Image (cartoon, rainbow, N blue to C red; front, side, top):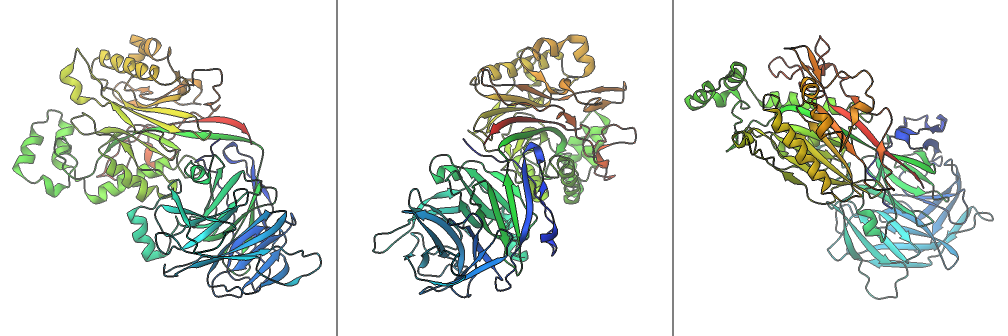
Length: 637
């Protein structure tokens, strides 16, 4: 079974009084888990704990060591960070010790010290030292001989590594690079037979968050390399592997085949409020994790997991009202969304004067869609999205009225950087104005997305004013398939028959999917409450195939869009749900999760209605409010 890209937020105020904070149950997003400040590393000689490992001789002992340039010695700690012993390693040198791992082989407990740090990528070879774990019952000041030593190189030249783990079942050592993008996974035999040893390249680990070009540029200036992995450990029972990053965050993967396959599936993501964590270790029970960072008297954190786990995925639909860049794209009628200085020519003015609608003509002539205007638009959109999931945003967003993938990626990478969205999913469609439907998601795609164009036999001349249906299938946390359709149906001024055709086409697309797929359709369906009541369009073409999410319960929701002309509310924006067609269907809409996301002041006019975006007045977000729901499943771990 796969593990997932779902967030549990673990917060600790690690500022000096950490050990006084009690353990706190934090069943966030339905997942029973606890974070406790177990204590602090009390021994003042531990100034940079760059590795952590649980003893295989005692369930109540942890091992750590200092970073580069320190003495070749280990420190034994209890589970509160109190020092128990100091162990010197004979015939070893600490050039740049970056991790430690514990394992059992032939019924003997061992510790592996990884002297693999190489900040400048210039070491000709690096070293792993292995010692038998000592019995602390009789000695607290010990000198250990080496059991064996592994000197090795990498096939692609020197690599800087801080994350090392031992798989004793397969007698291999795993090494994850720090500075390559994506991170590279290598393996070594745990007991090599001699000769020149070269690590084996296994593959890239792209399931970890990847930096953008802007991330890298800022990192050079600020020394904030948040995506880099700094620690790794495999559970004693071999069931899972955990990776620590500077973000700071833990990425937890349940074993699914070999380790490379496991690390290519989406992980559980645990953000931590701990500056630059460096060390991670599973507890002896394989059901907890210990984490610390590199500083004197560093806090020792413990994350413990429950057994029955409820996973959920949150989905939003959001018509963002004209998210354009300010470049005039060939073949698109985007002339209104240009800087004012680009509009001061006869050709542009002539085109604008040909627009019949007065407000649209004025926008074409006078709107200054400057860089500052775009920045404001992106900021208020980000603030709206961050209402969900404690500031991180939903797991999947279906978006409408987006000009291109580049502007959407800018929203994601510059304004929602902590949300860890994957690259935007958008396929350019036929709409003459250039507005498209899209997805942002933290869940990976199972296959490339597809755009299904809408065709209207009775109104072919109107097709250029319509958007296709974007289909994307995501991998759910348990490995199930979730197919999403992002839609933007023909506007209300078009004949009802066009929306009927669109609903029929959507039902056909649903019917063509595998029975085991869970399915949702989300977007701006442009079906007013008056039209729904007059024509019965939802009764005939939606309810036979879908559950309409807001009808399950949306509190006091009046709608997502307001027509001032006739003082009516409508759910132009809807989310439709269709479970897998089979007896084993288990994902469902979570009770009471459906809601309109309209809690930011910028979204709401004085009358309590959606406040249309106005870049000149610097107010408003969109004339649509987003709609949100969560789907969930409960698993016994």
